[in-house]
Length: 306
Length: 306
Image 1 (cartoon, rainbow over the protein chains, first blue to last red):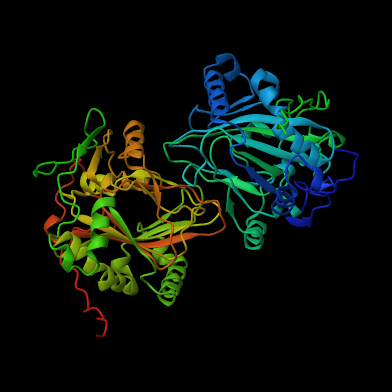
Image 2: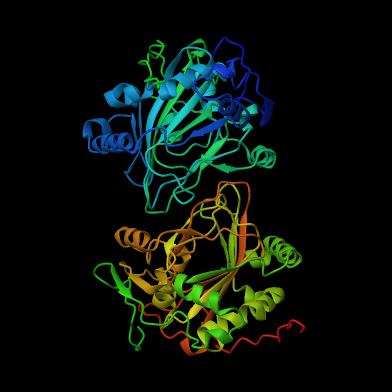
């Protein structure tokens, strides 16, 4: 177990508990000097998420989709643990660590259109804690139950504080029909400690369907009353930024339209992971970076003329 | 197997086939003389469904919900086959035959606000082929895969022609978050014959998760391209009328809000069921009425003054 103080106890607790967030959401205290408007930054701070419509062009999205297609045919890649398939079929569900095993996606991770915002919000240099390509197929895409990513990253990976955020780049239109992410806006301000000792190597099961580290129904019902539900349905190319502790989930997808996205987790370098707070051995490198916390280096953004 | 000609072959076929509907959708040829406007009737004919917003008052809905609550506690009822529970838990999912085992719901079935429209659209006297109360709980409400009800009623119950419709009375707000029914508007004009011999007593499995009599992915993808998807999200008290051959389904429900509705299937008396077209013995009475096809008798509607 980590020797660092555990501000967000979970897993090894007697009963579920809701505690206040001990960390800022927006770390930078000069929000009028950011890469996006202060209005948007304040919206992120309040809601815990932000949609940046069609930040990537359709041409870029097509290029990413072509890359996805190549990866689905890459039998060497599919044989690794970084490739996760649906429980009931063998359909590809996620490929992890794409910022290291794919040149193009490593560039996307460092793209200043996203990385600059992450650095600004977290007010620090950042590194990629986790990355993945999610593919929710049509007809039988399974649901993802409600969760805070931070609960898992803290308990299983040893992320000390809430100083991380995710960027999801939509590769397909996300609609109310194909399992667009649902969020509880504002829920990043409270943390639900979850009951249940984590089994060893639990990630092998949890990647298919998580049951440990999921919030209890009473706390969730309270969250839904207090914060409500919102859909993040948006067009392909849109980037969804969301705080590491935002409560989110998605329903199944029986429509014919797959739902795919790229997913990068930016963690502040000062918040690099320590020993997992659940006392287990850490999850493997493809799920949580530990080998190097070197700051992500982005090329200079193309400044608008004038 | 029925001796009647099978206009809609399914189950015992070599490969999936899409055929044209052989029957009208709107049977009555005087749509300007109906209990609802001609515009609404034409809309039903075109789309295969119609939403009648808040046809039942909140007071009536509350009364129905109280009845639902009573039924959830009725251990005698829960022990019968008419009560169906979720596969993974024991949560109540549906109670069938509510038009016979519950006095209040038998009155709802005959309520002229619905029954008059059913009689008019089908241009015949009607009886209740099936009725049920659906309860999709919060947090773990499962999905219903795409299907045409008629495919099952024809193959497994022996309903000869497409001359039936369903009325769903929403008892809770149906939203994009809690698994509102999705429909493919216009899809009632084509029938997808499905491959797969029906096992004996298949209803015991199919009520939990149907795999036989479900359309193939290629036909469904074609349907989605041709007809698109539409949500039927609406307020409690709303009635959704839909044709027996409309393609519909619903995603899972991880929200805290349950989704409940009453469901009555009106079949034209002239279209009463014969021997099942799949050659099996018929499903039990609680799933498909065979004991009596006596026309439903409704009280005179309260006509508006003036």
